[in-house]
Structure formats: C-alpha cells, structure tokens
Image 1 (tube, rainbow, N blue to C red):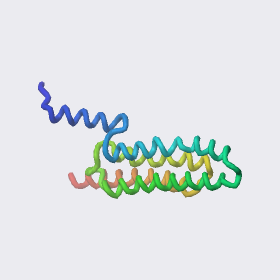
Image 2 (cartoon, rainbow, N blue to C red; image 1 turned 30 degrees about the vertical axis):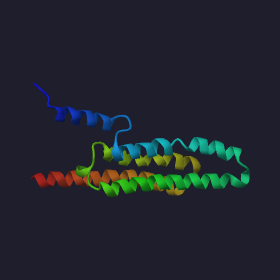
Image 3 (cartoon, helix red, strand yellow; image 1 turned 90 degrees about the horizontal axis):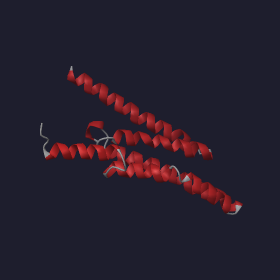
Image 4 (cartoon, one colour; image 1 turned 45 degrees about the vertical axis):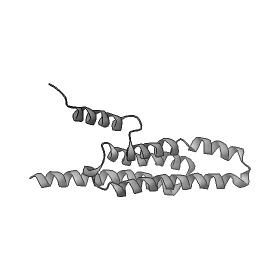
Length: 139
C-alpha cells in the first residue's frame, strides 16, 4: 500500500493541529489560552507588590484581558461559524475558551465566571445542532 504525498501531508497537518500549538486560528486560540489563563499568578504577585491604591487597577486590567481573550474566541467563531468549514480541532479549541472560568473564579470576576462556561456550552450546542442537521440531511 503506497501513500501519496498529499495524504501524508494531510496526516502530518492533522497531527500538528491536534498537538502542540498547531497553525493559523488553532495556534491563536491556544496561545490565547496558554498566555491568558496562567497570567493570574503574576497578576496576583503584582497585586501583592503594588500599593493598595493600585491593586484594583491591576485587577481591572487583567479582567479586561480575560474579556479580550473571550472576544478573540468570538471573533474566530465568527470567521469559522460552521464546524464543517473549520480547520481540524478548531471546534475543540473554541470550546477551550471555557477555561477562562478558573481565573475568573479565582478573582471573583462575575462576567468571566458567567461568560466562559456559557461560551463553552454555546460552542458545544452549535456543534451538536450542526451534527444533528447533518445526519438529518443524509436521510
């Protein structure tokens, strides 16, 4: 059984999309998560080090960052609204936006605590609807 170069390249691309940082929108979403989520630790450190008068300012900047990260997920979703038109694993990466629930919970940031899980559910529900419609179309 021989494998042509195209299918070998597709397999390599799919593996790159599944693991590591991937490429294109997958890479952007993964970097958003990798940078945005653990940032709460240095933010906490900065809040401890700055004068009390600046603590809330530091927190608000990070909270704005969380909102920015979630808006980035929305922007990518708008560019690839249908699962069928997305690169491999982009649906999974889109749903990972729900991870911003944890830093939001840590700082008691209500908008993030609500938006992150709602976002993950939204991505899952739109995927399920699309898959159901796809099955209905085949009958």
